[in-house]
Length: 449
Image 1 (cartoon, rainbow, N blue to C red):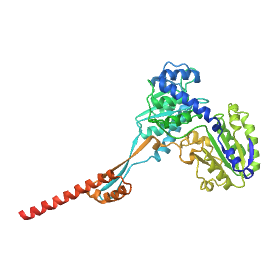
Image 2: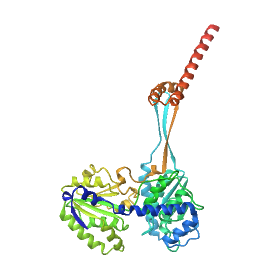
Image 3: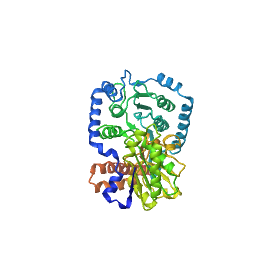
Image 4: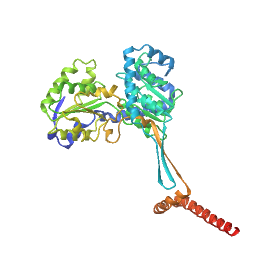
């Protein structure tokens, strides 16, 4: 891993240092994804089978995993693994349930009531990667919030293994979340199927889940098409940035970097420290530890696009982090809470030397479906509200319309939208007429008496 001194880099060199490796493959990926989307859109299930055979090496008769097959796979799962899945699901539920949005109602003027009501999205599509490694944890991170939101229909896609079956742990996680529609589909073709719908796969209103550059690009393309589904966020190749001071444990820091590097060759890991000695110690530890990893080849490819950055101070290190807006940010420093106050942009933050990013990936309770590629500049991770829509509701009485209507009349006149204006003035005139008629009726009644 290259050790770079931040103060010696000019503006362009700094931008190059923080550039994600996947950016270079943009044009090729964009064109390839577009072709796959069109193939699925026009070819339906037949196209999905052909793409699955070519890209995943699995020849499928049935694209869907039946509930009986799901339950059988769960029954055969190692008890220790099943218990861990259920334990993690419980903590994820506890955390997400605490932050659920609620509706509210307020009277903004006498006779004018405005409300916000929350409704679940009718049909959501969840993507659970399993290309380089199955990710049952992702099924929990998506399935638990969807369940809490009360989504009536949940569709889950996960790539098949070469024998045409789904990973049993993924099925167990799906079962824990009450998910029954499970499709053996991966990559851009899975996104296309959930976006457009096929004979077997229903079209979904919103798509969720991380994936490689192809999955991320597919989500982007379908979400920008006319009538296309919404998406949670850009959630592409994994990335972690560690800010460490001189007292940080080089062994732990290296382990944190490698925990993300092993995700895939397009993952990116960065250390920012105010201690060159620590940077050198971490580099040595990375080399020592990577050699014993089962996924060493994958991790080494990711490390080739990663960086060790030495800054003049921890304050400068935080500035680098805010510019980068990492998916995961580990503050491996003596006083992490103090440093957190200056952190403005990150998907998820891990405080102190005893808080490995792995906890967030699996079982602390926070969500690991997080913004990548700098999207933490404008969005956060998945939560229950991502599976809901919030509608506003309002109701005005005649008195309420009289109270706020004149404001609308003036503003619509300023915008020269006279139909808008008359929708108010006609009603105000009618109310005035009612009042005159009521007064006249009262006067006639007085005379009659």
